[in-house]
Amino acid sequence: MSSPRLAVALIVKNEAENLISCLESIKDWVDEIVIVDSGSTDSTLNIAHQYTNKVFSHPHWQGFGKQRQIAQSYIESEYVLWLDADEIITPELKQSILSAIQQNKPNTIYQIGRLSEVFGREIRHSGWYPDFVTRLYRTQDTQYNDSLVHEKVIQPKGFTLEKLNGDLLHYTYKDLHHYLVKSANYAKAWADQKETQGKTSSLAKGLSHALGCFIKMYLLKAGFLDGKQGFLLAILSSHSTFIKYADLWIRKQNH
Image (cartoon, rainbow, N blue to C red; front, side):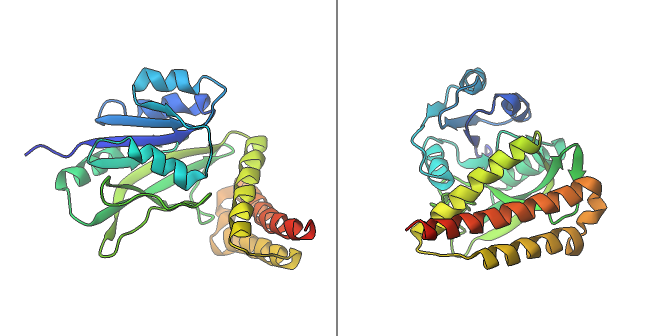
């Protein structure tokens, strides 16, 4: 009996710098590659077309969850593996993925451990490793939820989560400017989502969450073992935490 087919799905925008490395790590052993672009202005689309004929443009952005749902609608394979353009599959992880698909267990969703490199250093503490993300499942079993940001795979009742062996390498931020732009976009999407839910905030809440974030990352999660990058990450994460609560508070003041 032949093994079920595997698709890799990506949602991308202006990822020309990362996309080749990502696709090179999977091109020889997956059955299908589906890429949904949300309005790239660099050479992302040209690169994507070199690896697959299933490249689709959906520039009308409705959030990360909805965009992933759109991408999944194009998949024909029995399994889907989700990747971001700044991620690379290691050989050990590849074997673990293929083994899981061959076993084809019912009612099972798979998680993958991410190892991130930030500002020239692999981050193995700070609560960042192993950063388990749910990325592999049967296409017909489930999908991502509707969240604008921090979208999650819906775990159907009776399904189990299983962790795969091997790391997913994550090259998350090129430089400080890239971090600030990316975190600002996430903060805005978070505030958008909370606002539509009727949530409010305060600067005191933002400050307490920011302080809690620093203590957790740098002390409780041993970020100090990640050297200067660990300290910088804790500071930046605290800043990003404060900003998203401040954004939500400001919106209320403008009404």
